[in-house]
Length: 271
Image 1 (tube, rainbow, N blue to C red):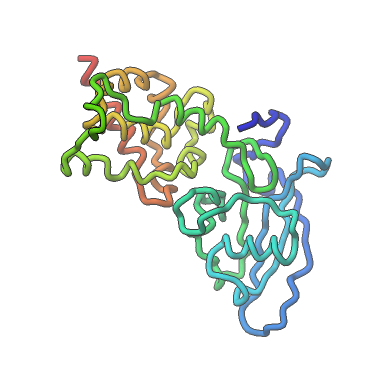
Image 2 (cartoon, rainbow, N blue to C red):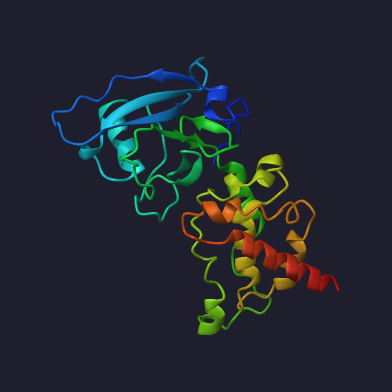
């Protein structure tokens, strides 16, 4: 993945009004009198233009699109403003591409329902404290590099016989529940104040959850080495159990619990 220039904008932790100017677009024309108009205030910024970041309002008829926020974004892009830029792929909560901040909470646009009954606008911004590439697209380079650093693959000192699998009991496989389901959407890491403060050194909830996934795998033979690699005052112990990671996970996982498990193992190995 090409390195994105540090000149791109980084989204502030302050409220939208603190850094963004608001602009308005005409409501989408509709032939239907049913449904309720819904306004979406969407973060816009294009590095190819000198205009500062802003919130742009789009109003659509909720009866003319699907029930999820991603459906609204696709409708706006297809029918109102083709320049609107965001990531999306599976639309089923599997790929993690459409992670963004919706009304102040990180989540997947494909799993977040439109609040059609509310008269308030839905505010959509990029994931917090990430460098913005354009509009709702953020630079994930550092996030993926941290994931790579924990070596997320099976490591063996004694390879199995050629053509044979490394077997695992059902009981040992069950120990990986609550970890292997992670889709690397970055909702947890970008909701963590510790990650905001020191994203270069603190691995963040997602990477540490995956570190524990491999530490806990009975087939892996580098358990102690993995524990030693992450047991560091910055990599691991910047976690202060704020629990934002657990609250924001769209898959219902508990990264804070996995981080606590690594801390326990690290303390046990030091005794």
